[in-house]
Length: 575
Image (cartoon, rainbow, N blue to C red; front, side, top):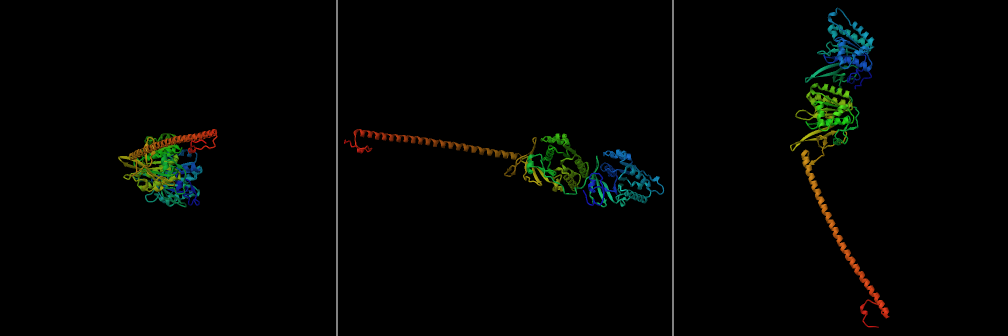
């Protein structure tokens, strides 16, 4: 919002959405504002809404002086916008006075004292602080002396200014000047011009603040919408870049894509672009993202610029994405519109109005690139920049879908807004061995680590599934080539495993045979050792027994010859 010079000039809020932002707070209080434009640009509605919003939002009553339409016509014309003017009239909060003048009724000199009296009575009746003089230029057609009319209008404006009334004057646009009768020369505090412009057979409404004395203001042309709730003005862009950002992460709805995005998905309030050729799965990713948001209990607004709602629901059901329950719960809302229905600026105003009414946490635009058919790329870039800025200011996560077929439509990044995109996911097609496969790549994602790998993904009744990265001798393999190579690798792995198992079994057998042979040798050795020990023991026992026998015999013979084992000591002679 413009804030410069706010301390030097008092302003009256209009209550008209968007206008107070570009005027820095509203129209100059206690002064006059000229509202000019050709027939059908919305001057009368603009002025009357200024009064109605003043009563309802600011508690400031108003007086509407009309020189063209009567009160009944005005009430009927604005009833469709939800303005109960009859109720305000009955409550004396609003007064409508139709002043009808005919040239043949005026003779000689004249003045506007009668208008002064009627206006004074209306002011006393309502206690109004806001006044509208609608179609003042009708005075120049009804009265014969334009110089005198100018002087009288100047006197009327001075009279209103002394009473500190905030005034809007409406007048028809001139062919050269802002008005047919040059009223901008003496209504100089604030001048607003309205215009209907036709571009490529579509109409868009534009507003421009020509001058605003004593205040900074937006100087661009701003699109505005006359919708079900009155007028809404769409600023060109958010004037401040000092916006809050969130550290919260939200899921894409596809777990393995979350893993590619640092494991947690997108940042809340960020701007996401999913681009790819026809049939690459762009809408499927958008629908999955919408479903994930609704599953978290968040509102999602889905703008469909090509397909009807029921067709989207049916198509997504075939890949396991059920949107109907979320639609029934009120968390999901579809807005269907054709690109050729209106101009870019009107589309922008419609987007703005729908988002403001529904207040979603997530929006999906499918596909935004189809708006290229309406106007040139420069106009589309300007419109998208304003849309992205609006969504960022509202902290809404935006998911844009773009068709990238260079033979027909340029991609959004080529239109100059790639710098506004926080996360860009590219979908690609690859044709190998007579089949078409889908690939996904995170081209960029600010503020988080992300994968740099191309991943194959499939769409089936189970949903969106990302396959493991498979590198062959000639690069990444996809589709049946990947499956065939995986089968070959599996067969080789199985063969190697069987060979290892056979060799392991053979080694175990030999180990057991070795152990058996060692056990047999050890048993044979143990037997031989036991036999030898037994024989040695017997021999020793026999020697001992022989010694003992000899000793006994010697004692019996009373021999003094000691017993010896030496046989030579026994010569066969007796002592």
